[in-house]
Length: 400
Image (cartoon, rainbow, N blue to C red):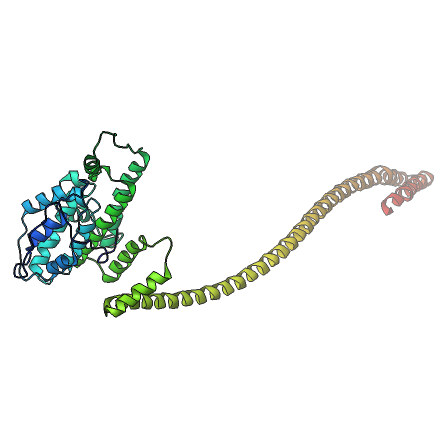
């Protein structure tokens, strides 16, 4: 896309000169629009691109009365515009003039005309829409983006598919027998190059943004950002500081305050963004310091946790050793109790045998010998001696 007001072509000349109009007979709106897109040829019979003078654009902005623009006018201009303005450069200039029109009724008519013409010239013209922007915006639910962003994304995506498709196709050169005029006509809307499609896309976007602004459906700051994005695509790969300086000098000489306002707007925006960047950088630095402190704290805690883990491992090993020792002690105690139970049984059996066989029986015999009419003391003494010997013999076992 080219500049809005800096790319106004000089008035067209044709093989047959058009009669000059007197100052008392200003051009009508219909005449300005028709002449802008009219098919004219150069000396080689090549179709000239559409153009419109600054005077005609100013006439559209300051036209003194409202005018109805018929659908027949739009249809007749479409037939010519598809050959003279396939990139919609002139249509974008006329749309801007319409947006700046001083009369509300005429502004509405001109905007509707420009939208209708754009709908008849863009890549989806086969749909037969009279207002491509309204049709696109009907799908916007207003949930994820602003109207301008939604419109821009929808149009850009449709052109992306077409541009990709053109890029995959091999270009076919016209046959040698084809005349220059025929070759020019063949490069109309259906055979635009990738570069021409990109230019048409940007002009469709520009017209759509102006359409939204005219309806009050987009914020001005968003529109400024959008238009500056379009201008960014026109940035020269080799910028000339001298040309920029001369251009600024010309604007000052012409006392063009609008450029100064535009530059001041971006300066203020830059200052605001610089302030935000400084604030965010300061906040980022503070967060980095806090992050480092947290990282140090985390590392300290990780070290402490590792020490605790080692201590827990040592304690767990000690617990296992204590469990093993306790188990062994329980086994020893169990063995001891078993041994004691065995010893007690043996002692009980030993004592029982001692008392019943070695003590009680001799004592009974001794008592029986002493109780006879003629006591046998020798027998009693002998039995008692045997009992004493048994007690003395076995009592040593109990004392061990």
